[in-house]
Image (cartoon, rainbow, N blue to C red; front, side, top):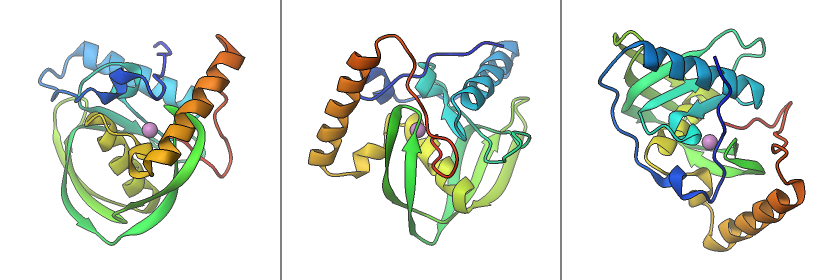
Length: 181
Ligand code: NI
């Protein structure tokens, strides 16, 4: 396993639309293991392959405290949505920034697992929000796209300033109540 570098806004590679996975092989297994390791190390509760510059439709999520409930969704499709609520979101590709985004509170999702088996599941609350956020990454979309142009521009400037100041050191990610994905 290996840690991968997480791309940061406004890196244009984050705007790439990911392709469906067609080969459920050892390379896919390595990618999934690397995504999980990179997500746990960040620390974060979700990560899309897009964020590590791999443009395949793969997302990993683990919202458990003990990091023992990893969820891998490959080629995910939302079949149904229910409810709507605003939740404060954070993103590993937009370090240190948190803002409210309106999403469905419950989603029904069809996806494949790492062996290529098809699954359907219902997810709610933080899991539902996280899945919708990660699926946006696969479309080249970021949570800051839901904010005003003015706000997004302020965030871009703030992150660029912080990157200049910290040099090659990695960004500090939130822990505790505020979680990024
Ligand atoms: Ni994100």
